[in-house]
Length: 220
Image (cartoon, rainbow, N blue to C red):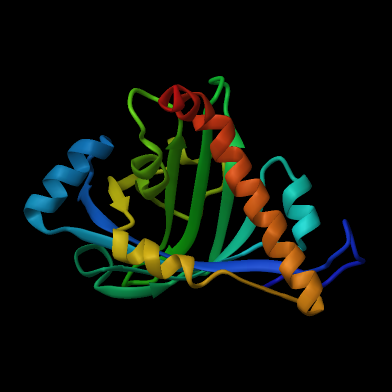
């Protein structure tokens, strides 16, 4: 459930939301992301999710170093879940700094249940880093994914039973659709436009921080 609208901060109480759909393959009991994806693709052990991600009031979202937002939607896997299961609670973090200089991560944590009602958690992360070559596209569209037993929180995943691991990706078509879903609401036209602008500044600014040196080299 979205947080109650609080007092105006940083000029607007508007929230930004967008949808994201990712799909890929996993392997039961496999701890390696890459091996889980390859073996899962061979065995057609599919996994996907469809999420609507909504920020708190945009000022709070931008000021929060964890850039935490709420994620709602569903997870689907015929092999693991027997179909589609609703996300009971979901969190998303945009561009969180890591101990590695120049690296940021996006984090996903989705609580849901299997076909028997047993609790599961999808834990995923995208690694945003300027490695060799221009890797912005694979970085921002590749989610290293594990599913563990129980509804875990940060710091509890290593002690939880591993169910499966693999990789999910955004296809170019899904990405094009995602770009059309960005909306802001809660503060009238001017406030909503301002919220979208602040979100874009945060998003593009983080990409420039990570990949700016590569872009500068290509202009020479």
